[in-house]
Image (cartoon, rainbow, N blue to C red; front, side):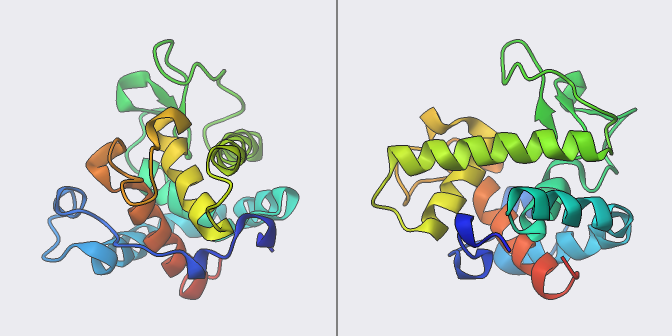
Length: 190
């Protein structure tokens, strides 16, 4: 599953930045911190496992990637207020940007619905495809990581693989999501 978008286990990652790890008052950073945060969110994430897997199958993308975006963006729903995050700028588990000065995506479905996860996954795939066009010489795993970064900041902000997270939230979004996805795939049953 997800072979068309690269194997998440083969994506290089440095994991969470100190800034991101500090949100959970962790005594570490990097891949270890990303894995700890994924594990912290795991009990809530299990509630969504079946729809995450359905959506992953439907779009041929690894469910662990969807779970990791949910973990990073909404902490598996834990930081949302009635489905809203980022002061009402983002919607749902995957934190789809609905703000007029941001992504301008329409709010689709309930915050924890399959419809919402389909929308978020379609946006992710759109950005992976944009990165594929922009960087045709990158391998599938690099394009996947670039697409994850673009999901957070837009493809126009992804300028090189070496600085893929330069403009992302915490300057670590794709690296953190990749590390969390690797945990969800190997330890979380996604």
